[in-house]
Image (tube, rainbow, N blue to C red; front, side):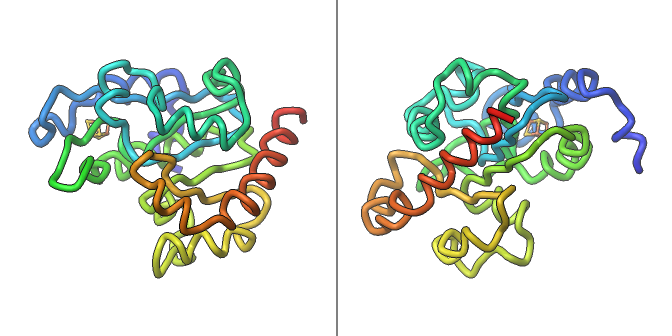
Length: 199
Ligand code: SF4
């Protein structure tokens, strides 16, 4: 066990929120967005904040977040209750925009913080992996060859892990091309979320 894992969670979160490691490469001042508590039951691992979340400092406070809460079938007050949901993107800061949308999460982030942070979330019963970066991190060799292939095998990852596509409005064409996702995955996701929150 590394020394980092011994740091109390509130100290670790304080250190993350003060992190400026990527300042030289980000197009703005770092603003890490992360929510977690030692009691969190469901872990949401997403990609990275977008511009609206960067501005608000509130995770998933955008159209993607509204769709995600609909998928999970939870109200805002439940989603933002850290004793219920930990919200841990692969990159805690908005990475900026590229030619075809937001840039990938900064790779420094997971390397620096995720092992220590996730090790302290001992009450997590369900991990939701949103998008390819979270799925590569959470599933390792089980990811691939494409995100769709990975999602089609969603039953293989066990009752404690569910991979999801990113709920961004940019993915509406994917949702339409893959009606099995709404028909098969969402009812199971909602049932597992309900069960975990009622335990
Ligand atoms: S993206 Fe992560 S590693 Fe980079 S400045 Fe933000 S918190 Fe630090």
